[in-house]
Length: 305
Image (cartoon, rainbow, N blue to C red; front, side, top):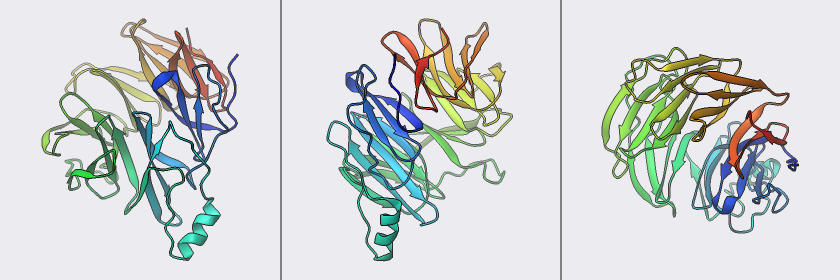
């Protein structure tokens, strides 16, 4: 029997040593051991919810934003060190009124961002992120800038379709996606634009899930496109109820395992198998040879088998 979280989850990362990091809807941070048992009482080092995040080398790189207070900050937190609670939103407001700029609690470093953060990715060497009406920035793990490029000039002219929603690190470079399913391939060493194109997508692109050359392009209304090349002529398509919350590739069954609204889905090239669940599945991951779902209630259960 799995334990239950004491807060609604937003995102899950698998760490080294078979541990799990869970980020909550209100900025909570919880680390679970290999038995999915909490290592400590969950903490909130950020004053608001975490908008975007990535993990590399057991370090969390994350951004929080408060649109009302017009402030955003990015921070680095070592997940192998002690994590404490930070200031509340009310305390943040008072500090801003006194012209003080507090750091993120338990962070190795944190910096103010000059616009809303939209996408972020990291690996063992660097972090790449983008913010509203700004370019792409690449920094190392100590926050030293490696390169930056101006805002990408997309071909699509539809209003609000040129917002970056995803950044991937591939063997060929950084693959950057917009809401219009337009993409740019960028040299990860210097930011040089190498290629660009667009996938024929019938909806607004919200999320991209990747395993090697396989990609799921997902819209908010449940439309999903499975492509294996950026210029795929005959991609697989699926339309289900509600948005896709998470998807992972199952090597043994040769299919995608998907949490889509209140359904578990196995999607192979030959069939789609579905199973209903009472709660919304937020994340799916493999744990001790079983596929597990973290639900929006904070409970863990097995994915469709």
